[in-house]
Length: 258
Image (cartoon, rainbow, N blue to C red; front, side):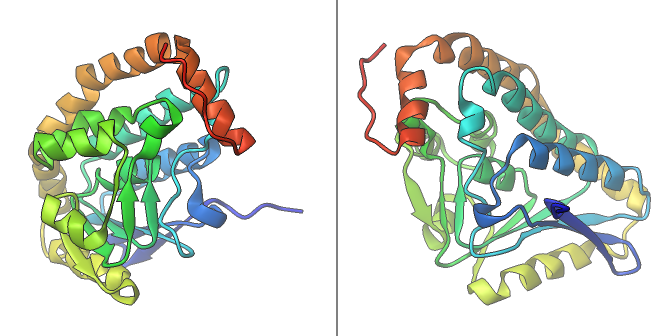
């Protein structure tokens, strides 16, 4: 049996707009294989001078449940996390404006991927959040780049409490840029992408890299420090191991606070 590709790429507007469509099964979980496929897709689109903007959409009821929890376990996370962070850096490096269409659940690594967008449209009934702290860990990308989108109290709330918010509340907090009925979310992202059609492809890429210089810096030394904090210190704690093990065993975690 041949497995379906976890993403599909299509071209619109004579190739000037690219659609990257997540189709990774229930919840569009961002396994390492999906991460690698996304990274390759963005690199390939970056090499195509015709592309002015990218629309990121998702199949099914959820944008993404986030990164694979089993791949957070010791022995797996050391490969998964750097690959995921590499994807975030690729998105910035290629210099393509990114629109993101969020329906349903947008959690954990899914939200970290979404906030890389230049224009994020969320369904009014979507659920957005990073519950990692409830598993004994934290979201490094969100901690690194969310201060560029939201006020510090919002960062604290989402990163240290792991709370989730609705699409409407996400708009009020600055987490997303537009809210629409679920049926209209994709169309709103395509309409945003169309704004780039008459611009120079070269100019758009340089302007996008310039506009996202702060993101590039946040995903540089700052994310390096957070990745080291996560892999070298956090994953050495008993609670990080317990949180992941408890989730996989579908039981409540027993914290020992160390």
